[in-house]
Length: 304
Image: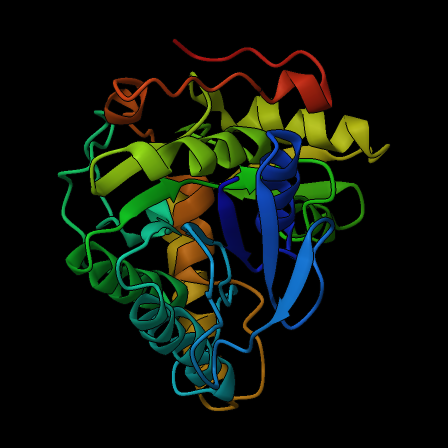
């Protein structure tokens, strides 16, 4: 029986990978500080030392520090310790094993080109510490011969990041969004989990992972608000105004490293600029995204 180790298996993405692996009859070992939903727990702190991979055939590395920390803050240092140094420790322990490393589309350089981003798009000029540390971590993984997956905006039931942040920005029945409506790729967590299990057999290298078609941002936001019983009007803030406000908020936060800016350039770019991923490379390996936003939140027109 194939033994698969899933790091970060107590988290949003890792837990889905662990469950999917168990459903396929694989022996699952959940690596992390907390037990995963299935299989055997193998304690591992990515900031301390290498994991125990004795008897493991395949490693899926989902563990990551996420967020949008202030430059120079303790949170940024922790992010580097997990996403870069932790990756180095994992890769050293995994030598000779197949490794699937879950990265992010945040590694890509910002683009004003409306064409879908393929894996050859430059990896540089990331807008925050998360993007920079994921880029540095995936560079180590690629150099070690791993398969690297680049999802964008992973969502699903129990999502602890995207939807809570969106709902928290509703004020007095109003939700401000940067720029006009935009075409965005999103990734259902089930689609990512499926790719993680298939990718162990793919040639090493980077692969974009996203839903079959991109969505109109405003349609998605409206569907989320309806599903959570939140009545709010969507108002578009001109993109230059939103970017200027985010820059000012970041500058103020740097004066207080323990604070969190209410708005960042990364957040503005995530919502305000079109980002569509080309998933052809993964599809050529036999991967198919079967879940869509409508499966969770009801009908939303996907843009062709």
